[in-house]
Length: 77
Ligand SMILES: [Zn+2]
Image 1 (cartoon, rainbow, N blue to C red):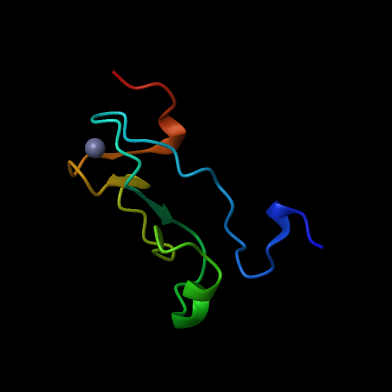
Image 2: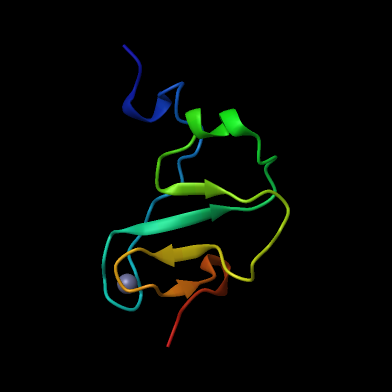
């Protein structure tokens, strides 16, 4: 038996979090810096989107209200 956090098929384990604007859990993570190869999708949840080295200026998007933010920015207004 593997512990719950050792799923070999999911390499990306950052907590999904919630939208700071509307509180929705429908948050998309932009994964910056990983090679945007086609098969990377097998290793990340469907709410994480590898974007390679192109930093769009934010790394979180809300599917519910369209808010964008940067997780590294810390607290938000
Ligand atoms: Zn939202």
